[in-house]
Amino acid sequence: MEQVSFSWLVYIIMLIMIAASKLHKSVIAITAGVIFFISRYVTVADVSKYSLINLDFIVMIAGMSIIASFMKHSGIFQFLVLKAVRKSGWNCDLLSRNICVVILLLSAFFCDRIAVVLMFPIVAFIFDSLNLELNNTIMGALNSASIGGVLLSISGAEVILISTAAKISFTEYLTFITPALFVVFIIYIFYMQIFMGGENRIDAENTNFSIIKFNEEMAILGPNLFSKLLLILISTITILCFSSIMGLSDSVIIITGAALLFLTIELSPDKVLKEIKLNIFFYILGLQIVAAAFYKYHIYDTIALQLTEVFGHNGFYVCIFILVSGAVLSLAFGRLSMTFLFLPVISILTGMGFQAMPLYSSFIFSMAFARSPTMLREIPKVLKNTHIEEKNVWEHYSKLFKKTAVVYFMCFAWFVLYVYLRFFYNS
Image 1 (spheres, rainbow, N blue to C red):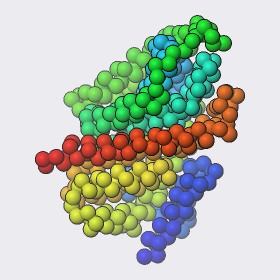
Image 2 (image 1 turned 30 degrees about the horizontal axis):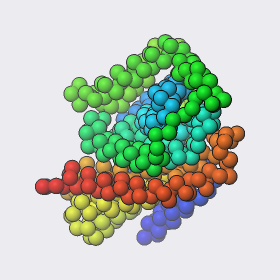
Image 3 (image 1 turned 90 degrees about the horizontal axis):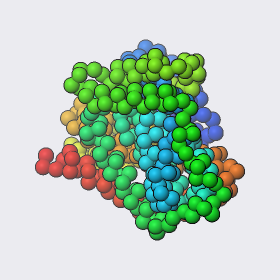
Image 4 (image 1 turned 90 degrees about the vertical axis):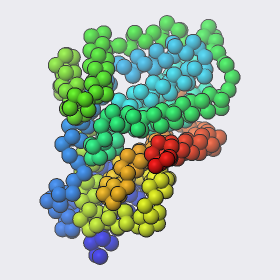
């Protein structure tokens, strides 16, 4: 009993610090792990025995990190956003929609938070040059990044961990989970377009910025680098779609694509590898140590048993609970930390007879909008020296959040309906 109380105490303090402290999450998580080691309640052998991390996860996240680093050096971010501007035909609604689509795609193959941080200076500069208000695009971009962060099984550390631990292939994820997330993106874009209203066109002649400077070709750092990256990326995704037929694991395909980039693109490995953030691995290690304690002292089992006592063996009710609680907790404490809480519980529930895919899908859906508000803290940093003053960003966001709260309810209702129709109707 003492070990259980101690585990909960350290875990709760860790979550509170992650939510409220200015310290980096990796420092907080690894410190919590060290506390467990020092207390001798958890040993290195326990971490190995109860590990959620397998070789597939390590290989896949390393491969995606390498691919993301090549993307950053290729100029693809600037190219796509400038292409979105030109394709908008100087229509405000279409411009915002195109930018949201670009951020969705980049977040699906790159870290969603970093994609926002890299994209927004460019977007803010363009909007300022065209004398347009950027505030209406902020919510759309943030939510697009958050959805993109879970759109594919390779989109982020959380979904990579889930897909590798639960053995959900790229094709299964694309079949069962991606369609619902894509519909949510369409719902949000449709709502945002109505909210913005009007078929406003930009009078390009009256702007202080020449249209010729929106030429996307200027963003490409090298045609060979860009074309090779695009070819390998498309080939990798295509092969992933047929991985189950070919008998290859997703991690092997991803790391092969990363190796091909090194072989075909003349870019220094040191330059590429230094872009990989090691703090994510320390964060994951700290969370894994805490998870080992929860496994060792049967805390996950207790949570799973309590859920069955409350909801019986009604899988649909459990899915709704995971959808609601996962969204709230992920919003407060981060998606990755909650993945280490929900993933083992769901695994135990599947061992008790619950269908696996509905439970995993519900948790992934719960994370669809979990990061958009927390990513907002990055926006003031990247909007300095633009037409939006840093002190006004939060005020605009608060107003927009209130006006768009209905779309969050619509998306939640859609997720509930999708889970029911896809997994429980006529079952």
